[in-house]
Amino acid sequence: MTETTQIGFDLLSYIHDSRQTYGLRSQDYTRYRRFCAHRLQRVRKSVKLSQGTGTTFKRKEVTAENARTAEHLEVLVLEAGAGVGLKSQLHFQQEEYEAALDCAVFSRAVSLRLAQAGTSQQHALAHAMMATLDPIVRLSAYRVRVPGAQQKPPGEVAQEWYEQQMVGKPERAASNVPGYAEIAQKLAAFGSDEPANDQYESACSAQLAWRGGSIGFASSELAGALAKAEKALAAENAVAMYRVVERAAQRLHVESAQAAAKVQSPVADALASAYLAVQLHAVCVQHALVLAKYRKQINLLIPRLPLFSPAVGAWITETPAAEAKPGLLGKIAGMPDGAQVVVLCDLIRKTLARLQGLVAGILARMAPGAVRLISGSQISDEISAAQAYYNAVRGYYAAAQHASAEHTAYVDALALLDSVVSQEIPQALQLITSVSGQEPADCLWSAQVGVAAADVQKLESDAAQALQVVRGLCADGKSSSVAAKEWVADPSKCPAMAANALAGRAGAPARVPQLVDLDAVSFAAVPVKPLFYDLAAASIDFDLDAIEAKAGRQSKGKLSSLIGGLWGGR
Image 1: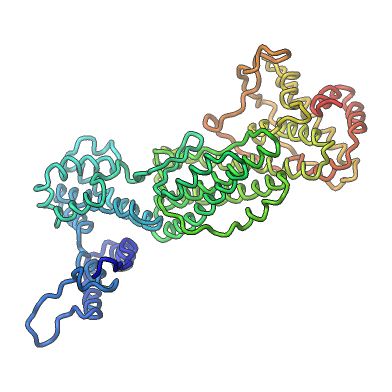
Image 2: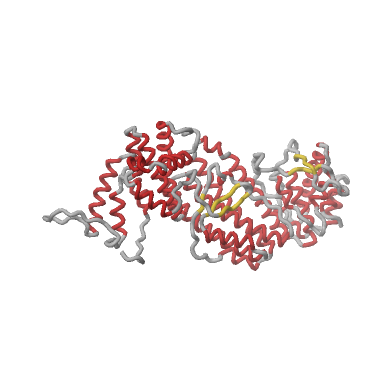
């Protein structure tokens, strides 16, 4: 075989399919050995390596000089069909626990190296194989009396055993592992000969920080695109770079999801969801950049997903192929900024729904202890909360597109009132930004909120009355088809109070409501359509003077100051 000749052979996929199809799914080793023998005979015959009849026996080996096709490599794989990975199970059944531990740890190290050098599909396959070896590692280490074998993760136990008992004592390891010296030498030439300290972690050259968690990358091209996007000074350039990241992550998600469905492993599912999370992150950043141009201020909620924390881990390794066509994101480039925000919100909501489905599949197949360890219910709650939040953002900007500039402050007031009363998601209070040089949210808090809980209750009561007034106005207006809704309101839920960073300024209270932190509480997001979205058409032709006068009459004058402050004054 010349130096420039390369033969493509998907080793991990071939081994996994053979084992799962021909006996090892049900621990039928006899059937698997029979398959290897029969398949080896057929492949040898097809590549003319079989022994001819009536001649003296002379073994025909596969060498670098005579290898021409993938079938030659298949011969080597079939000859090693009962190799190190299967010997670990054989030794374990024969209660030879030290030999079983050596074989399992060494097979695990080889699988990890193959995973780091391969694609996303090979990642999933290799880690699925490693997951099948972990029970042997744990129980064999317990029988051999390895210190801390039951308290430490199998990956950490395997790493310590590999360093101390195999790398440090090669003669002892060679007595239990066939071909140990040669394979260990090739592992050392391939890279570091130390396996990672956990089965769910790989050597990552870059990290994507995301609200207290991180997602690791080993793809230099994808990491480079992220670095360029983060360093882009102009918002237009940054949006373009994050679209490159999103398209690459979308393609990798499809590939890894296919591998996850193939191996049926929660570990493989975590890989697919990690790629989808990167895609979601890229879309969220694009949304924030466009929103920054449109509203000059951003207060967006990006969910923290403990699924990608070191407790469970996720890995991302792949070299993205050529860029895909721009698609929808390329078509919206010419839209107004507000319209782009609406489209991006729709993309985020769809991606969150897909991510929620993947996470639900992972949690359903994990052991109860593992689900409790990573707070599985909190993951689902945070994704649901993020969906509710982006529903609110999308509805707000959809309404703003239909409202004239003169009535923008009124739409802001509706958004704030709706979020206060419905308690759909407290982070929606950050949605209100400067309008005509004033900040309705700050005006509301400074005017209505103090230290006493009674002031907070009064705020909720006033907001509830204001919403009732708005419902009546809608029924009397041109958009009479807008139906009243049963809004979620719990008077017992008062916003937590915190020190005001603006204390000391004129009229600024000492304490203000503290936005709820998703990391500290769990709550059920209410899937209601925001009031300000239903009022999009009605807000076009509203006469603010008539509204204020009618609101004053219906509330007996109690809401004039509140509504006037929310609308920014006239």
